[in-house]
Image (cartoon, rainbow, N blue to C red; front, side):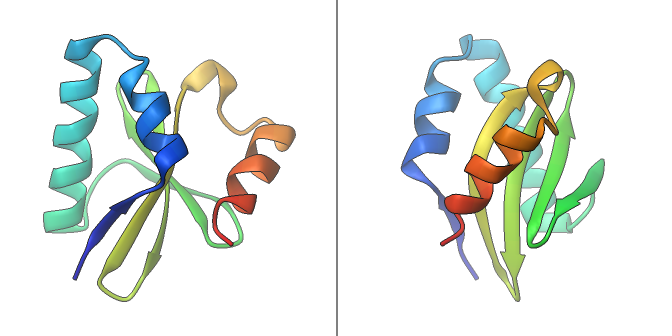
Length: 90
């Protein structure tokens, strides 16, 4: 059972204000521990967890969860962005 952060996702998270970083971290931890949250299937293996106005993109395989991106909802689900996130799954 492991929680993995893609380096690009960590970089995106660090660019956000500290209070939002904390909120996102709590949302990810809560989801990882309980498997509950405001989630949405995006495409293929890619899913999104909502935390306020932000979306945390992830994949899940068995007990493993990998965070591949963090975006404001206004940028969420744009086809080009989804395609770029799916490349991080490889």
